[in-house]
Amino acid sequence: MALRVRVCEITDVVPGELRGFAVPGVTWPVMVTSLEGVLVAFPGVCPHDDVSLVDYGVLDPDRMLRCRVHGYRFDLDTGACMHMPSLHLRRYKITVVGTELFVDLL
Image (cartoon, rainbow, N blue to C red; front, side, top):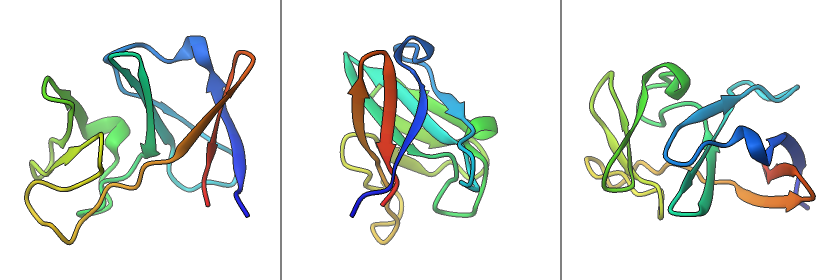
């Protein structure tokens, strides 16, 4: 069973920009972006070393997320880490209802 939570209004998502949204009861913010019209959501923590992606995450032009602390890069389409195959950036399933964006945490 999914745990669906409201993250933001769809208008809060800026294409090509990372945005972090605090969700009550969730330790790390939920990061959301829109890449070429496709919404992507993932935890606001780097799976490499628990670094805040709100503060240190950068979108690279090739649809990659880069953590500026250690330089680890993650494919936003698949979650795959380019530096260490055992690492994976979890991506949340997104549902838009009216003007609200929800993600499934589980």
